[in-house]
Image 1 (tube, chains in turn green, cyan):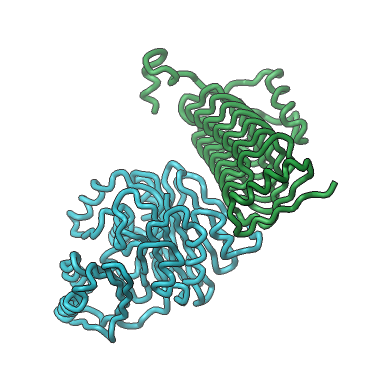
Image 2 (cartoon, helix red, strand yellow):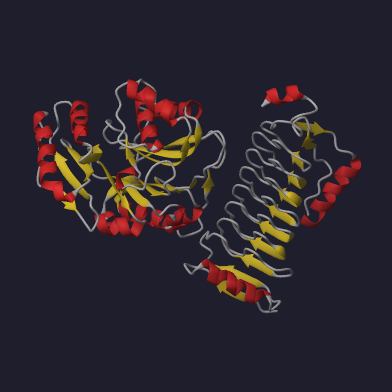
Length: 230
Length: 314
């Protein structure tokens, strides 16, 4: 099947995104070239499209995705896939700050490192980072999993809600109100099921599973002395 | 949200053109005003001044008063000043002056005219050009595109903490330290506390812009004996707020980022030269190929990039 090529350059992003939406209706694979790290590329994509961005993209690429498959062949800027509900985003390089912020479903796969606050406030879906996740990743994540295979930066999983942060490799420091727990075999199998389609399963991995300590969840109850930790 | 940029060349070249491109790509981060700090060929004697007068109807009398202060300090103009005007009420000037007997004392007296005329940079090689409008607009007015030098800074301002005035634009000169300039993206939350401390030590601030404070704070630390690297490191714990700033001297550019990793900095380095900016799409205006990008996006980071073989240790 032939592919549709969309050239970004210095054209207006609204024009590019309208062209993308039209191209999605054709059912053909789409290749977006000359991306120049521009912001807001491929925001609000429908279900079922297959789009490759040839080069680096700027902020919010794949934001509000409702089911398309995106591949970014180099780096992505801030908030890749922010608020996405469904679909798959692969970043071949590194992702900037707030990757997967507030996403509610789907999968983001970053082959390099991810910047600070990866998965901030996410409410579902999975983020797999082959490299390291940055400072304060998982901050206030309500649901879903952040899986980092190359370690984590400072203040990891700070103020987590019901999301989970799984890290293989060194963790520079933990955030507030985080517990590191021993995962059960069933839980590891669940994570491996996420990694398996990406070809990233390694049974020898030494996981650190981080969950909320729940000591700061309700101000008026539980362990008031925990607030002094902040 | 503001946009900042730095550029270092491995030999004197079109640093003005590159800074305009870096800032044009970041105009959406703040189109209130744009500014540039360019380090050109250093003068062996004398200083180049850039500044602004606030009422062009009073230009002749303001410049006369300014010249009297120069003469009082054993200095004078080395030629006719270059004046730039347009429809706006303010005017901008560039002038070269002979060495005052005591630079700090002259700056203090010249600042008494600050309600009429304001020196915005003073250096052997530093020139700060700033004005209302986007990068191309400011460049067209002040011919920044044609400026030759080794390195420089750029800034696109979205005014948040002080007014949209031409003199509240960045970069800021670290008054009264010659040849030191700063650009900053962020907010300093203990601004008035820090400012009070520095004012008690005799420093004078001409705006209520927090970036002006950082420039003076870092320079003061170095005056007290810290190296640039030590001062940058100390700034992260001593100054409260979210920030990424770049500070330039004739020897290069240093940067510091706050403890919360809120403000990005993206760099492409090639041997002997680099481009740094808030956004990747800006550095790709200078390096259009897919060079590897370095993301300084962690918390509490500092770094120094020297020009040529020069060290910024002192």
